[in-house]
Amino acid sequence: MTDRKHELAANLAKVEQRITDACAAAGRPRQDVTLIVVTKTYPADDVRILSELGVRHVAENRDQDAAPKAAACSDLPLSWHFVGQLQTNKVRSVVGYADVVQSVDRARLVTALSKEAVRAGREVGCLLQVALDAEEGGRGERGGVPPAGIEELADLVAGSEGLRLDGLMTVAPLSGEYAGRQQAAFEHLMDLSTRVRRTHPAANMVSAGMSADLEQAVAAGATHVRVGTAVLGVRPRLG
Ligand SMILES: *Cc1c(COP(=O)(O)O)cnc(C)c1O
Image (tube, rainbow, N blue to C red):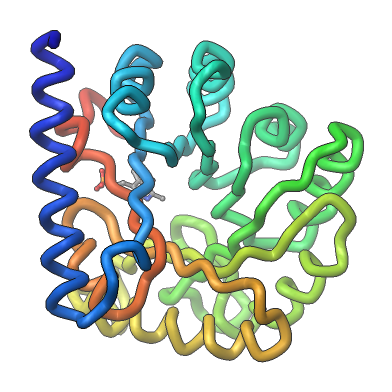
């Protein structure tokens, strides 16, 4: 084993233990929570090692980096999640490799995703990114639809050809009423998910929690955690 493979294996084991402990504390079965490793800023070689170590879900947030990485790893049994703010001019590229887009936050993006998914003959899973810090009518600092806009956007995704409404995603807000209160934020997301599932019962993914707050997300009921630095190390640059 290379040094890097040892390092990633050790980090993965620690994260796995954290998820297992968080599930036990919450009285949830371990298999209720899926680990998505956020590989942004790290090379395709690391993605390959992660795949060898049993990782099945990876996430990226910039198409410029993700597209070549996904191409270099197209032989691996991986699901690719797109978790970054997405401009409509990147949609065609992203639809080429993403199985799930977790950052769907506006109608124009839904229209573009649908058009490109149909053109590519693919079905793309969509999570609505919820901005828990958004003012009424506005979008979150890091993108996201405000809670009041979820229902309309969910209906739009569900009615769009080539798209599948999979659920909700959030990033714990750094400011506003939920600053420093990750678990309360994630519990709010769960309530919003319950509401969405009344009309869209299959949209049962709840993506929340990162390296610093995955325990709070699991406690709140998240089905997917997105972990970058705890597996790959502190990123060399902002990503
Ligand atoms: C980078 C990123 C993560 C992972 O964050 P870490 O703190 O490195 O675990 C999760 N979600 C999104 C949307 C990200 O951009």
